[in-house]
Amino acid sequence: SAGRTLDIFMDFQLRHTSPWRPNMSTTCMWRLVGKWTESQRCGILHGLLHRWVGRRQLRITKVWHSAWAAAQVGWTPPTSMPADAAHLFHACESGKGWQDCMHYCTHDASFDAQAEPLKDIKTMHGYAEWMKGIAVVAMPGSRYELNAQSFDPETRTATFFGTFRGTHTGHLHGFPAPTHKSMETQYVYNMHVAPCGKVDRIIKVWHSAWAAAQVGWTPATSMPADAAHLFHACESGKGWQECMHYCTHDASFDAQ
Image 1 (cartoon, rainbow, N blue to C red):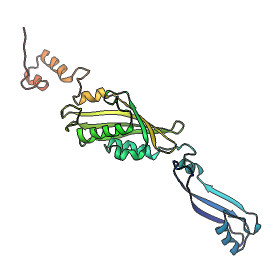
Image 2 (image 1 turned 180 degrees about the horizontal axis):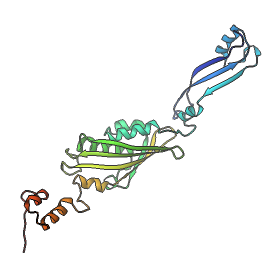
Image 3 (image 1 turned 60 degrees about the vertical axis):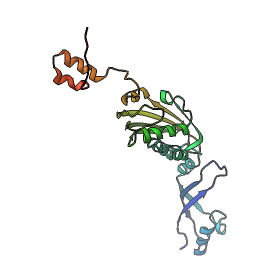
């Protein structure tokens, strides 16, 4: 009937003219208040964006999450973790390699780390393949845990804090023979997210020497626990019954 308020829900799609920007898809509601006949009400539905119906004055209220839509096309920084950054973290840590990680990075995404095993790796391509070797070949069955994550919209920086666990049972070129020892190592990724939504730079913060010592790839940098236990057990007169736990079965002894 005449004078009824119209609530119109619309799905709106926009293709940005710049090819590197993503498309936008959003939902909005129009509320129209005015007096019109039934035929005029139908005309509003068909000609809302093109003309006033019958030259009558209308009051239009648009209900729309504009910030959500603007973030999709890079007009404003996103306020939550960008999807590509999260996908990249999981793809990399599960050993998917560049074949999968490439979908979440710019083609020339850089990589950097102040860690000895990674000092010569400068691209995300190279690092993704390195992680594939570790997670799939050297330590099959490895697993990881995402402990915390955050996103700073001002600097477009995504941060992930994780823990990697694995046992060295596989042969990988450039690494020692399998030691059958396990590592549990913590690390942080700092990822910069480009306006297009993909990651264009990643920095890894990692105590690689600690991890390497756990699996026997480098000499331990602190006193091995068994050596310390053996000293105290021996000097306190515990005898072989106790000392045997800290020695190989054929451990030798000599004295002058």
